[in-house]
Image (cartoon, rainbow over all chains, first blue to last red; front, side, top):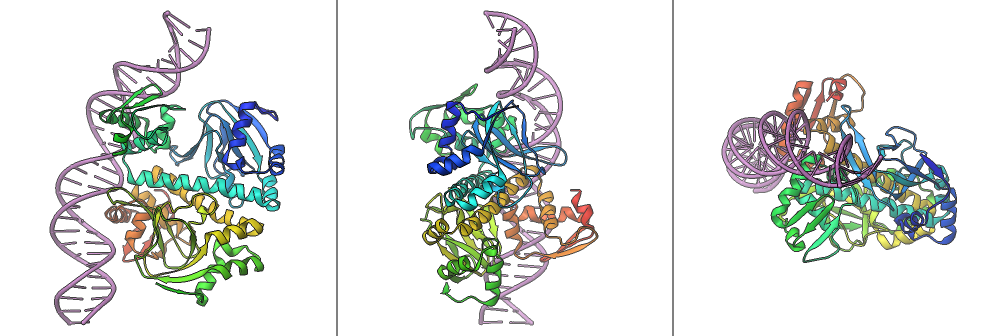
Length: 227
Length: 227
DNA sequence: GTGATTGATTGATCAGTATCAAATCCCTCT
DNA sequence: AGAGGGATTTGATACTGATCAATCAATCAC
């Protein structure tokens, strides 16, 4: 692990656009950024573990981080996958004091680390920061509620179709998207075993979805919407 | 539906102990409570519908409220069940402006209604209220993340066992609890069809769980923990 | 109390997905 | 460009839970 106070230009741009910081005025921004630490982590590195005392939360600047729980037998269940711009564990600020799940980089990643106590103090003073926190946590809540509904309402091929549609820029006609990460990560996000994701993709061939490596081609976006 | 500004003593007690209001000082409390409306609803009454503009959020004072999504074919998926003391839709304050799911009373219920815009204004001024909101939303987020992990890691009997354990006051020996609502509601909460809940209960008989009506008897709480 | 309505259980069947094993593909590294 | 190794796909099988139908139980209205 490599820690530094310096930000690359690209990472800085991601940070400034992150929902958590985007709406902030300059003074709040400076205060938050002066207390954060940047670190670059290799793939598969644990960022936090279930049960550890929660003394920091994070914002992903580059790469993807997987949040998951373990069963007693060691099976893993993904709870959410954080993309650049996403924060995680920030909702523990005013509730729990231990992490409730594990976080692991899915690939080499850069993270900004925020000390819980320091941000807690800032949030008490600065209503703008409190509001940014509310917005970030709310966004997460919307995402997790979506996830529950998706899991419970839709089959594997439908969930995959939903995911593809959510990343399709266009509304009709044909489209082509590129997965930003490995398929096994997508499988976890959708609550599927990798094999099930693979079969879901192949069952979508009959509605014009072609997959080659990380490239997904959609013949007719409209057709995909109808299941 | 019956609307009034008066609170019964019991409802007032629930409100004051609700996580959302519990930590607040007197002035914040008065300001919030002066703007809320109390209403008593019959069973099966919709409180909000997916897609409607979100101009209020609610706190359950009595009864239970079911939050759920509908699929295009009309199938329902419960996202969460709100008990007395729980708030719902409060996370839309600083994000969406339409409701993202339906809410329906599961039985006759009493709710406190808070106008979104009014609370938004209050939260901007009063850091204490902002903090209370963060706490309430965080609590929800923890709950929904738990729900995802539960759905993905455990089978029906295990989820039922977890639910029973979560309501068992004691740590060992035998225990007896009473469901506060219909079994079909519990089934929905756990992401199961009512038939599956029924079968899960009967499969738990071999570890000493007996069900009669709403009464659940557990022979050995420790034994239940091991699956 | 008695019929009627709603909720819960049980049985039979089926669809969907996990799991394990084997083969193949793709990406990265040199 | 080619080799190596992890990632993905495919096949076979088992299991879990949904669905439909029928029965049973409990509650309510009159």
